[in-house]
Length: 229
Ligand code: HEM
Image (cartoon, rainbow, N blue to C red):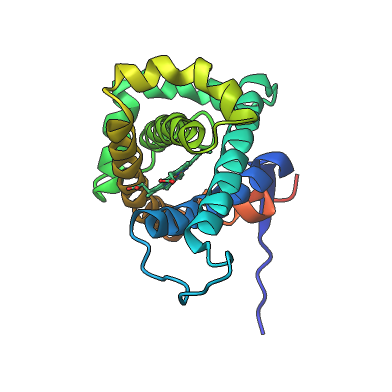
């Protein structure tokens, strides 16, 4: 049997913190979509019961809000990691690819099977970076509208602190009914993002095996090199 030795260069793509927060956000978003749709259309109702125990919608809403604040906290910390990292391949460095027409054209050609993958400065290509920027804006919109819905349901404690902070925004968008609509429509925008994101990750992993789709789990990507160095 002939065995051929291959050598790979191991590069840390995502730090443990980034990976952990990616999955916390992914699972909280799945749960928020499910529980949010239940709140919008409560398709299950408890059996009628004379005892005050059948508060299924309130229970769903409580867990929705818990997951919502988890998403908000993790997203704020993720933003902090984005801004504070000093790693060489950090995301701020390759944000500059975003403003290069050559990179955009090269990447579009690559996606259309018309050219090689352009040399990106970091982990994300400009289209990917742009998509993640849009997702961050969607998370910001759904979080702000969620917080407004929250203080209109829970008037005491945190709700009493948040109301004076965000009342202006509620008024600016035309009232609570519009906030609910924005929250609901943003849910659909996020739902559209998810399959596109998963498809692109898998596509990249298949077309460029060293592209490192699994690096969001293991952290490293492995690029084949000529010999051990
Ligand atoms: C990916 C994130 C999220 C998704 C997909 C999501 C989805 C939804 C959906 C579909 C609804 C029902 C809207 C309707 O009645 O049509 C809802 C309601 C609600 N959401 Fe979210 N949400 C998210 C994040 C948040 C956050 C961050 C908060 C705030 C902490 C939040 C708080 C609420 C509240 C308080 C309600 C209204 C409950 C009620 O009507 O009593 N959500 N959400």
